[in-house]
Image (cartoon, rainbow, N blue to C red):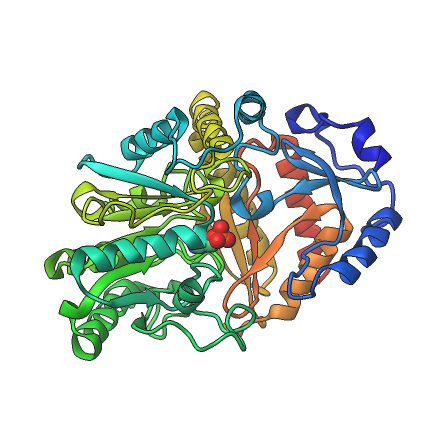
Length: 454
Ligand SMILES: *Cc1c(COP(=O)(O)O)cnc(C)c1O
């Protein structure tokens, strides 16, 4: 307790931007806290790295033992603007002293409307849009499906292999991977259908044919087994996040979109992980010029405060009756102020350009590393959303233990990295977009050493 209060308010970018290890990882204080966690919190709530955080900002996370770790995780793509980003802190600080909650559905306030206006303006497409706000990515995906079903009068929802959309009943049903997200949690929601994703590294006939063949298979399944006229919505991540940072082969997304347009199917882009400059575009859909009917955002939207949004065509969102959408906390005033601070920061610090430069630094280094280490089967991603896929050398057989071992070596050296992938064999890198160059370089050097030693 005392360490927390004595240094309270000293997080954010002014935190010393250095890797500093003063104990083993995790240190004694974190171990103590972890023992308490294990006694008080069910094990279903997992832990990537059991260091307990006291401060964070810029490119570092500081723990209860005084270790300063390089952050290549951003709290799972949330703190793109950095932890305790000044514009976020200042707005939230003012708001928390003015009022903390009224419920937007009871007595509204301006910041919610401003967030909606901003999202309507900056998301892909210049058609008339509406936005409503929720608390989490899952809640927003679920609401997007509700809206699409209401607008179309249809029930079926099509999702893709390797997709991840959340942990509620509907969104875990939309999610592909059984363990850990679905196992034992059934029965699942009805009218959810899964079709192939254009996964270039694992496409049986090779990456060149991937987009065309995968789109043909997906469309064939929809047409023959579901019936296009029964489909309310297609829900897809423009880059599959938890599935392993899979960029669908170029041409796949436009082909699916075109099919949706021809058949009156609502195309929902789940940009919960990819949004807000992460991929080197403000939204990942921009990369291939995709204009979704509905775009779902969360994670990077509010610098860590819980907020999510559904933004879509006015003629679709306006169909729902008065009172049909909402929730007690959705668009909480603190979270809305934080989101406005995030948007100001992205613009003022050109974080979209910054994300591109992070990719330009990381990708060549990782490709060179892959040449020397055949355990790396694929290097991929865009901007500050980069991954390596680990395989048994000389094959495409997934190698999850190599991923786990490399991650453990990085953690021991004070570099926070995350794993991902349907096969658990992907290391993903999501540095804050504000990470200083010297920490990015140092993190890459630690990673290179960890791969070389594995
Ligand atoms: C994290 C994530 C979600 C779920 O968001 P929560 O805020 O955890 O509910 C949905 N879709 C994608 C693509 C995600 O990465």
